[in-house]
Length: 531
Image 1: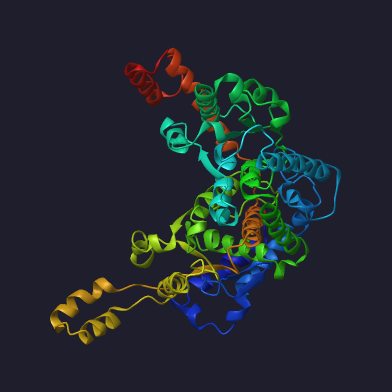
Image 2: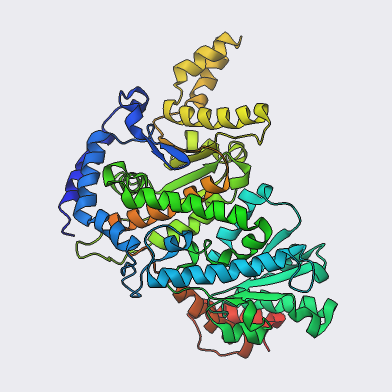
C-alpha cells in the first residue's frame, strides 16, 4: 500500500486513543461537528474524532481523489470498474444535467408511472386493493423500508405485501386474507432466474390461477426485469414488463421501476416528493466541497472509526418506528457494497473495509442488547436515527422517544463510576455493606461515542434525502478504503454453488461440493428431497 496520507490518519488514531474516556463531552468546538444537509443534520460531536483528525482524513480524501470520483459519478463515467459501468441510481431522482442514458431512464420511469396511474384508476380491468411484491435483496429491502416509512402518506385504498423468502410460509403469510380478484402481483427480478424469486413467482401465479383461472390470472401479473422473455413466459404481458438498467445496482434501485408497487400504492404526488428529497441531497453532495460535504465527512468518519480505530461494527438504532427496517436496508447497502478485499485503486487498501452493520428499533433494543453497548467488552460505533416530528402528533410519546435517544447517547459517553453508583445506592437507603457489593456491578466504562442523524420530520422528502445520503456515504467510504462499492462477486459465487448443490440434491450427483456438503446432500435426499 503506497497511500502516503494513511500514516497521518493512523497517527491521529493513536493520539485519540490516548485521550481520557469521554473527552468529547468537554469539547469546545461542538458546533463544528453538527453537519447540516437538506432535511436533516448529523451530530457526530460525541464520536472520538476532532478537527485535527478530520484534517488528516481530508488529506486522505484528496489523495484518493474523492472530489473527482464524485464528479465522475455525477457525470455518468465508469465508476464500477470490474463491470465497466457507470452507477446511475442518482439520475432516477431527476437531478443533475440531462444526458442520453438518463433520458432513457426517465422514459422508463414515466412508463412505470403511467402504469401506476392506470392501476390506481381501475385501468387494469379490476380494482387494485392489494399488491403482492415478490423480490429479494435489493428488489425487496428498499421497497419494504419506503413502504413502512411512508404508508401513512397514502390514502389507504391499496395495501402492499412483500414476499422474499423461498420458505413457503413467507408466501402464505404474505397472501393471508388477500382477495386474488383485487390483488396485483408484481415480480421484481433483474434476471428472473433468482431461485427464491422464481419459486415465489410460480407460487403467486398458481395462487391466482386457482382462484381466477388462467385467463383471469393474466390480468393480475406485472414484472420489473431485464429479462422480458422470461417474464412473458411466466405470464406477464409485454406492456406490463418494466426494465431494470444494468447501471443501477439492486441495493441502489428503489428509485427505479423496482419501486412500482410504491408508485401505485403511495400515488404519484408522494412518490415525486420522495424523489425530490433524494435529488436535493444529490445536489448537496455534488456541489459542496469535501470539507462541507456531509456524505464525504461521514465517510471519512466511518473509515476513521472502523479501520483506523478498529471498531468492528456499527449499531443503527432507529427511534422512529416507521424506520424500523432501516438497519436491514443498511446491512445490504453497506456490507454488500463495501465488504470487499480486492483493491480498486492503484494505491491499494488501507485496511479492513466495512463495519458489520446491525441494529433495531431503539426503544426495543434498550430492553435487549443495549446492555452489551453500555457494559460489554465488545466495541461498536453507535448511530441513532430520530426525527423532530417524533410521536406522530402525540407530544408525550414524542418526548419519550427523543429523550430516550438522547439519554442513551449521553449515558454511553459518560458512563458511571462505581463510586457514583455507590453514593446513589446509599442515598436511596441501602445499607453500606450491600451498596459496596452492588456498586461494582453498576459500573459503566463510558467513552463510547455515537452519532445522531436527526430528520426535520419523517416526510417523503426527508426519507429520500436520508437514503440518498447513505448511498453517497457508502460510495465515498468505498473510495477512501480503495474498493469498488458497486460490484458483489461474493454474492454471485454463493448463488452458483447453491444452484449446483440443488441439482445434486435433486439428481443424486455424487461429486458436487466438498465432503461436508456431500454428506448433507445425502442426508436431505434420504429425507425425500430428491427427484
